[in-house]
Amino acid sequence: MRLFPLLIATLIAASPALAADKRVLRIDSLTATQKDGAILVQAKGAVSSGGWTRPHLHLLHGDGHSVVLEFLAAPPPPGMVVIDGLVPVAATLLVKGRATSIHVQADENEITSQVVK
Image 1 (cartoon, one colour):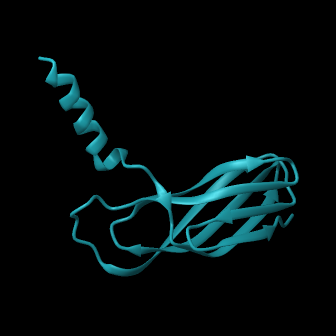
Image 2 (image 1 turned 60 degrees about the horizontal axis):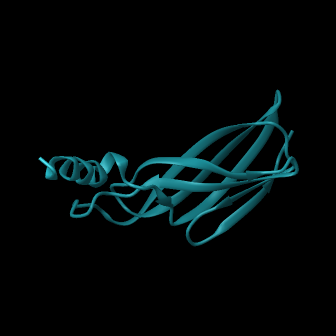
């Protein structure tokens, strides 16, 4: 009976749906527009293979002048057969508040964009 909680914890940790998100390989374009007290951020980039899911932008820091985001996605589970090559991904985020610039980080590069009103 002592092994049952350990077995459940191991199965949950191994679940692909709960795998830790990682930064996408690169970011290719970034747009940020201010409207009605919020900033609409749109990013496009690429991952290194097929099988990546749930691309999204994650807020790291915002100080009123600039906002720093990470471009993340869930990698494919180990052993999954995937396309070996660059695959495009895109994500959108609505950030409440105001800022003058948006900085987005990927694995290989970073891009900063001015917020357009």
